[in-house]
Image (tube, rainbow, N blue to C red; front, side, top):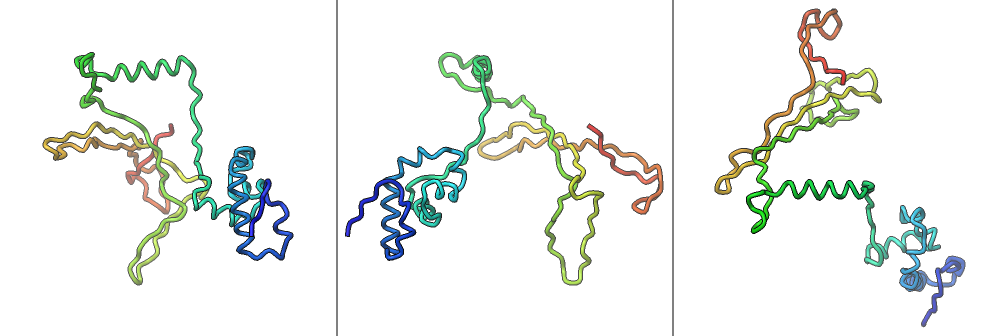
Length: 207
């Protein structure tokens, strides 16, 4: 038995006398015929398998099976920066400046960067809304409190690192110099249920 599929199968669902296996074959043939037509579907209708199935008038399960068979592929698109002509020139100039001047022009190589230290800041939440712990039988459940679950305090840390060093395949320096919090120690000015007056307490800088 042969079937001729022209376009997408708009009315296969209405024909209840088709056995399920035959319907599956028809859908597969129609998808192969309409594979170039996937490009004609607007990108705004191709975010999910359900959207694409509605645009092609096909069942979602059938389209998902064709996805696993490799008839089409899933792509995660990352947004890119808009680069001007000047931006491109600056990037090329930066790469050229990273070349070792003594290796040009015979054997151009990049600088070793052993004398460069990288400094960057990083924000960390003081705690998370939900935290998993493994407790012993009968151990008391830890109590964590914040003023607002939607506005948990954050602390800034300054991370400093360099390029790791190896000698004969053995790491002699892992490059980790340190990470330092933007906090300061100050005695508590008032008594509270959490701490007595005068106790040293960590306060974070308002940046």
